[in-house]
Image (cartoon, rainbow, N blue to C red; front, top):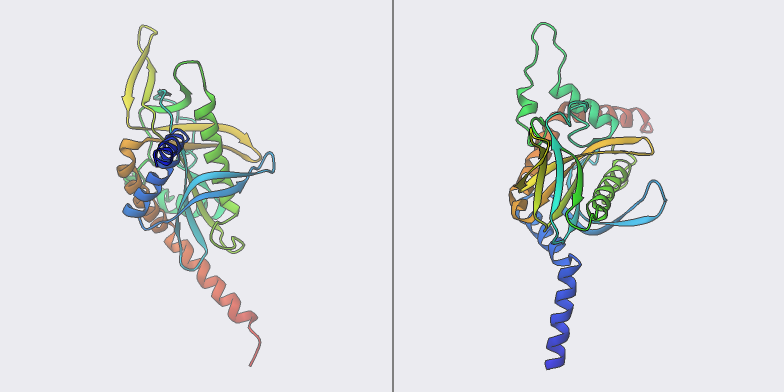
Length: 281
């Protein structure tokens, strides 16, 4: 019995060191605080290598007719060394608002942009609706690079960033739950959850770094992956996870609200086409 107890303890330690309990806790929090379909240990195809790779968690806000899908793509990293997000106030200045928010299919991009940024020369919009959506209207300090403190190891946060983005891109044209052939509206949000302390680094007036511990941050990710080149990754500490997951549900609800008219129009067009092509009785 003592041997079995020691073995169980060693296994539990190994699981903890490799991040499995974190993944399970994140999935449980998502199931508790959202209406998402939550799946763990799913695979996607790497657009550059063509290899199948695993992503830790995908939380999906689906649409009952199957023409839209919103995915929150989560990579979990149980590490101890601090992570540092390098940030500046002008990091997002060259980004379109939607590009610094998430990854959109063409149809979803058009629908959301048309709803949130209406063109009305007689009555200019103040964009208050867009500004009220969590993480959408990024102002102030936004991250442009990330590293792991000590030993100069950038690999852990970079690999996590790359994995979450590649899985998010793949989900624009594929679905974990159904055929994506007739699902033109798709939005993906890449997310990293870490157990590491998270710091934001800026530059003081005297040229020295200024550090501030934060609970979450946003990292602008700029890398050409086929036709993709830029988005934003949410980096979240475990202590902030419950608040953030609730914000994910609000974001999904607001995105469906923004796409509502376009979804209804597309569905009506689809039904008319079906009626037209139906065989005569």
